Image 1 (cartoon, rainbow, N blue to C red):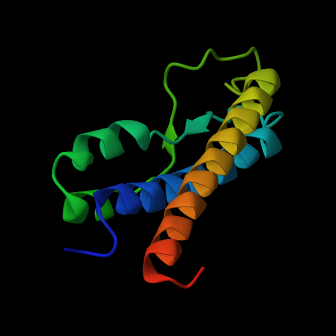
Image 2: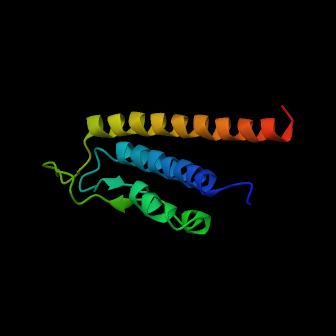
Length: 118
C-alpha cells in the first residue's frame, strides 16, 4: 500500500493546475488592452477527471497548460479579454485553490495522527 494514494496525487495535480490557471488569468488581465490579444485558459479538470480512473501513475502524468480560448467573444480592437469575467475567474480559482489546500492539510493531519506524531 502506498502512503500517497490516487486522491493525494489528484490533489497535488489540481493544486498545480490552479497555479497555472491563476498565472494565465493574471496574464490575460495584464494584456486586456493589448489589441489582438487572444484570451488564454487552462482546463485541467477534464484531463484530471479522465485520469483518476487510471490510478496514481495516470494522475501524475496530467499537466496543465494555457491554451487559446477560441470561444471568447472578440472586441472591436481584436482582444478577447473581458476584465470582469477574468476577475471573477480569478476569484473562483483562488477559492478552489484554498479548498484544495484545506483538504490536503486535513489528509496530512490524518496521517500524522495515524503515525502518532500529533
